[in-house]
Image (cartoon, rainbow, N blue to C red; front, side):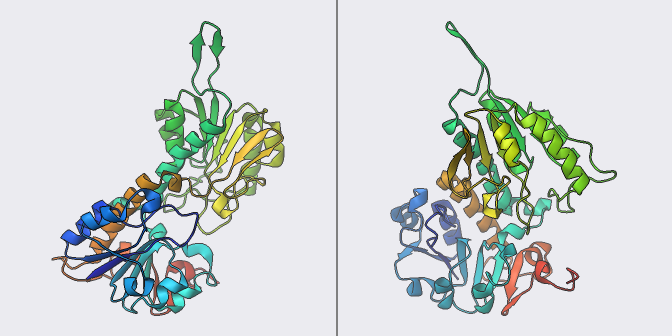
Length: 381
């Protein structure tokens, strides 16, 4: 069996779908592993490191994908990558499954069987394959480092002979994996941290990290989360009450980190222009949702802008700014998933189409979009 790892075609993408460690593991399972030349350089994995792990380095895309059984990628493969890939090959990547049928047309029309890692079910057995968690964890950490880099003051309180430096005040909006790591990192740097989320269940997690939980009372009998554990869109009344609370709180904050993303929908607007303008000169906003439009109306994807003295950081791929660690974690997520596709003796592909992890991540098969999010009957469309 042959696994191929392609270099990412997006100039902004620094990650790679396999590390030398996972290559070594694949080789140990009996795979022939072929890595596109320089695929790992942005993550500081050299061609020699892959060779030492047992991979072959290939330059031509057509030769690379020839006879491949599995193609591993970070982002959705391009049309050029799919053309010469055997019809029987499996594609495993972050495929942006909610992009819509037009965006996914090349993948669908290629006839390949593909698995979207973002659709991984939130069950205990799938935790080691959860790419959203592994990448969000790093993004939350990096969000605080980016804020600290742009902030003109120190984070901790400092007692000096020349006087006392007050600690920075950090407000985290959205307490998922990224938000929790942002809280923990800001606390380690000595900031006073508050956080909010629509899910009351996150209150205990926030307080366990030494932060204060700020939240309006939820709608009656509403947990604020979906069956899958994600934050859901709330009622208009809740949004109004939440906005009033945030508006009064945010003007006292030095740094705000927003992490709110709802799968398949534009990012919710958490911070208005008026709220931004109420913040002090030199304040920072880090918006982790710019890939879906952003949590503020002024955020610009992959840019740092300044509006009336407030810096808004809009890097869409914060995990990719820690390319080696992000690649290592992502590669391990993929490796665990790939082993699930194999027979018990790991000698060949033997996909269990009844497995909820398989059905939960399957996006395209036989020229069709087969996931439930594209099932018009299930979506009442």
